[in-house]
Length: 377
Ligand SMILES: *[C@@H]1O[C@H](CO)[C@@H](O)[C@H](O)[C@H]1NC(C)=O
Image (cartoon, rainbow, N blue to C red; front, top):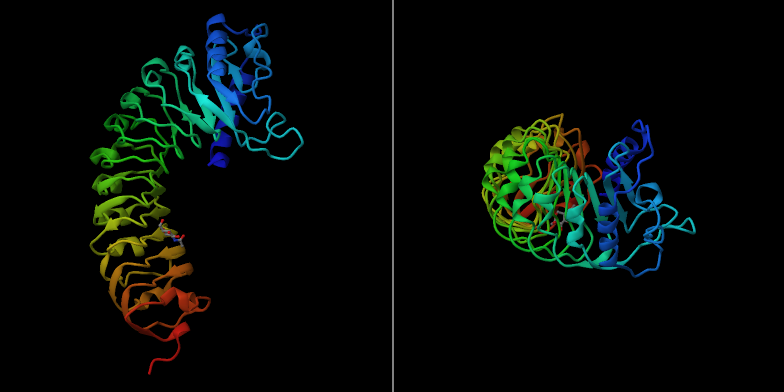
């Protein structure tokens, strides 16, 4: 996750640092006071000196760790503190260190009203809520990343007010409540949404498909229920969809198989039922499909083609019946295949994709034979 966000972070930092500066910016007193309040609410438990440069009599735009200002306005545009960073402060001995901070995210963050990037990531023990003032107070916010902490409470209901938001990452916290309905009004901005590994309940918003710019939607390991909204099938940029380990019901929307950009679909460990859409298996762009641990039934569609290329195809632990489809032998590549714990029967077809597979890929079915399971009698 950090690796994905890094280029964006660097680009933003470069923008802030290299923009033409006629006069050196210096910290506004209000921004400095806000930063000092943010500091006062946090505790650098690993004594890494995260805040050693944050002192009242120095220019916060000059060399405060993790802070950068817009050179023309002199206002703080960027606050980014990562517990897993590899810079000199976080890894003084050249070895990556894992930082720990406790405390909470002060509402004073809302006084930094020119902020475009707010990152407090992977500090493990930061508790309390995501400040509810953020959506209404920080209109320029493009990146909001607070993953890997111990945040509680709801995602601010007005999150959809942040009309410039491109990245929202609140993964790996203890957030409760539902995904705010307002989020779907970020259709022209939001590119990356990561809310994985929280305690979110309720449904995925029906009009989730309005998020036309979204390329990664990671909502796995929550307590979401209800159906997978059919609108996800019409998202023109959605490449990675992870809804695994929730309590979702109903079928996989068949139209999802027609996506030209979908590369990975993680739906494992839900209560998904119905058949596997043939279009999904015939989709040559889809490289990862995990439907494991659901209640999917019927036959595996005989819809693979010579352009099918799966690095992972996990259909294990469902109620699939019928035979292993013949066309699977035509697939260009199947890296990890798991069809175990179903009700399949018949001869496993011979072919290149099966050469490297062992019996575990086919274990615990009704009456499979051939291939790695040995001769049919
Ligand atoms: C598929 O998803 C399930 C549930 O998240 C997980 O337990 C399993 O390991 C995944 N399969 C593979 C091959 O990663």
